[in-house]
Image (cartoon, rainbow, N blue to C red):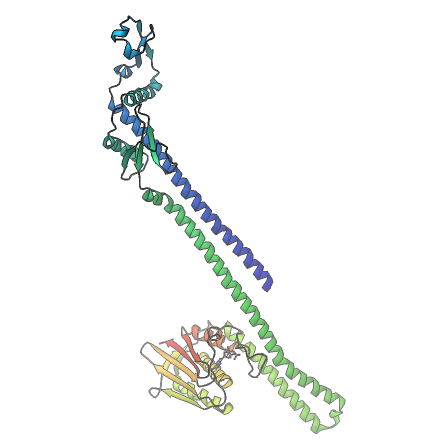
Length: 448
Ligand code: ADP
């Protein structure tokens, strides 16, 4: 059982760790994807903004606005002399030239505009107006869902664009320039990662929570297993002794011719009857507890004078027990609406425990405190107390404080769990305070 539970727990732990690791990996993957997507969008927007900016800087041929866009090129054919040398005295020559008009496909028209704009601005080396470019870039980013303050700078060296940089190069013929954008992506990254991160967090918490819950259940199961074994060993111990005595006395009757000796027969049958009574008592004790467990829901409330009920019970108790029991209460009678049988059983169990565990010299006291909205029953003793390690478990079924293998005090660990069940069935609460060597106090509070 223990091993099986351990294996189950190990498998569950592995599964939960894998889920957590996978979630972390997924989060990282998502984060770097978002980062990459942000970078690509920002660079593409910058390139597009530069093109737009360039097309605004020069006047483009009006023939591109026609229904059928075209471009007319002035082409020199002969002689082949450098264009700018033609009119110098050295090269005063005639040359042939022709105009060529090329029809531009409607779908290619934007590219042609872009190409001419780039070519002209770059070759003419028009100085960069970073302010105008910044406005265009901001709008371009907004179109792509990126809203944030933008700062553009230009630099001549180094010209290489680093992978982390949002930058684009303009190849002016005099000296190329790098336009670099400074963007604070943290807000954008936060917005794009908050949902997956929250989902992951919920999943991680759920997995860790279920593992924790499972460990609680397994620990409880293991404890129950141990308690069950303790219970069986206790009950076997309690039953074995009387059975051994029964067997010996039976053997004596058979062997020593007791049947013909009425005096001996009487003694042995007396012993047997005693043992049978004891066994019956034990069986009834267990039956009683399980029967009452089943009838906890049945309500038989009536007006009860607590003072009288408790006085009677203490009286009965003191016939059997040597410990003195003090009874304190305020007023002459305290009448409450409750189930007297349950109150008697509760007090019986608590007094029984006090005299069993507290030791012969201990003082036991019972007190009733009657308040306007509740009443309290307090049972305390000045006995050996319960250790802080055991205290949280004493109301658990079958739990007994470990006395090694000593069976000096009889019990099955059912009394207090039963008391708690009864108190709760009366809508009450039970609390225990105890210090080793100083004593134990049970405080029961019932609503009026
Ligand atoms: P049991 O049948 O063993 O008496 P209970 O549920 O009544 O079972 O009590 C659980 C354990 O709590 C006992 O084994 C005992 O060690 C401890 N206990 C209960 N009452 C007292 C007390 N008044 N003083 C010291 N120990 C106590």
